[in-house]
Length: 460
Image 1 (cartoon, helix red, strand yellow):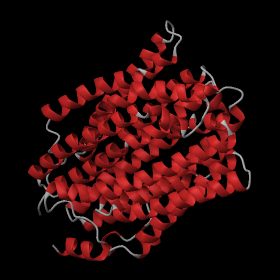
Image 2 (cartoon, rainbow, N blue to C red):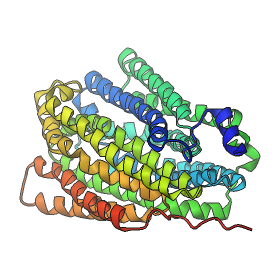
Image 3 (spheres, rainbow, N blue to C red):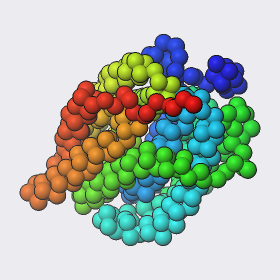
Image 4 (cartoon, one colour):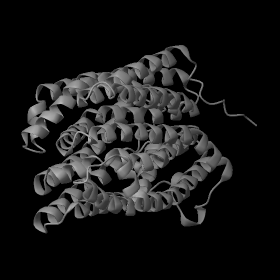
């Protein structure tokens, strides 16, 4: 108990291996939800300021780059998730030496990975955008925006690593504080750079980079100066521990591949949307920003499930694992579906907040009324994915996502657009593939022994 008492007293973090399951999960998930809410708010504010201040071409440029950014960044974010699972497992099992190695190895991995992303992103941005069939009236703006984002991508990657470490040891509160600070910085800088100073999309991108740098620095200070000794980050311990790296890669590479290939599929989807012009691109971009709000319960509960499952498997509390999993797979779908139905009812008003152009509103509403009522399918897939990752079975969700959200989605679009020259057919690719992934995930959840994700710790 000394490990847990010291941890609680020093950081106020939540130990997920004890207490009432649903209360502990909600207490852990709520700061994650608020943090993602503020993050989504500043992304939405960013989009609104760009759309209202710079016009629909700028809105289309900024909004159409999201899938491409995540294609490149997503792999390393997946590695970060794998590192968090390993860290949570060692924390739950009170294995301090392995915990320290996991934390310091993941930080070095993040630094090397972000340097690679910067080189690839800055160099190949125009090539990627042309491959996506970005319209000529949008291409220069999208190129300028992305190059600034990729120049500062290390701030994004390292914040995700630092926040993942804190969350893995039960501290979801401080990442919330840092995201709130980052969100406020982003909005203030957006207004200053774009509205007051009259800057373009490059300045909007710079505001995003500086805000993310703020959250990364605050997280690092927390880990270096104010954390319990079990997981304090020190410069002299920053090195790659090969056995730990292999375990991180075993858990993280499937998620990284899943993220990147799924993003590649979304890039292909976006390229099929781009051929319908800037107005449709702007409308879809507006809905994508709104869609992020509905996915907040999905993301926060999925991350909670991964941490909860990993900590409790590390502590060999298997009945507790099952109880937490049941709560998660019910809560996330119901919450996201409620949000989706509300969004469907007021969709025209929501889209008009981004752009008053009737064509843009119509395009956003068309996408929203197809996808929003079926958010429950996507939420269930993500919830079970979080459980399986926490259990060390990250290959399972990778196979499901690759087969349904990538291969099936791209095949559907490739075939359908040959016969139907209507963007609505492209929009239907999302709920259709959500359905198939949800069915497979239900089978995995009910019929496989994911609970015993790791072998029991050997006693000497």
